[in-house]
Image 1: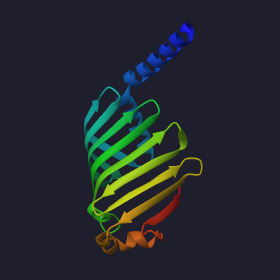
Image 2: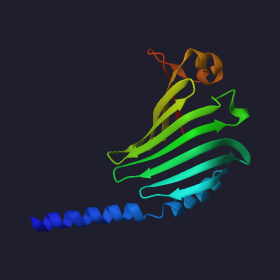
Image 3: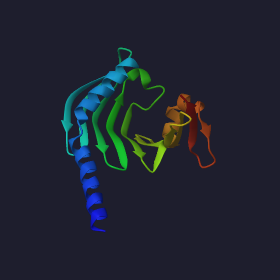
Image 4: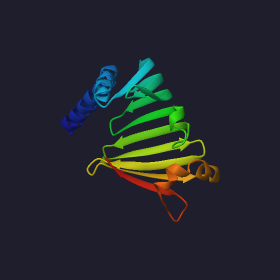
Length: 176
């Protein structure tokens, strides 16, 4: 019994050590290189590696050389069973205002080892809330938006492509 307990304790110590000493900044740079292949460039002013997380502040995201949005802060949390990316204060470029709200208060993307094929998404917009998931096995993104009345009036072009549900939410499925 002591041997099993000792082995389990050593294994947990090893896993925790890997999470703490993981070179998070190097993984971030690797992700930036992969995004450049998709014509996405991220310019960040501050990157801070913490114990189990990586915080990125004041980022500007470009797509195909055109500024797409500004992001106040990004927190990437690496835990043993669940990882998450929390993005705060996203300001979209003026070209996107007719299709999407110009400001997104927060965006949370999380992945759990208990459900490895699903990535969960939650967003707080100015006049709406959104939630959904991305199914890795089928490459399908499913989003639901709970809009306010003002949101429905302001973003008709966005809601035209969505299916209105019985509970007043709007749904869209997109296969990548």
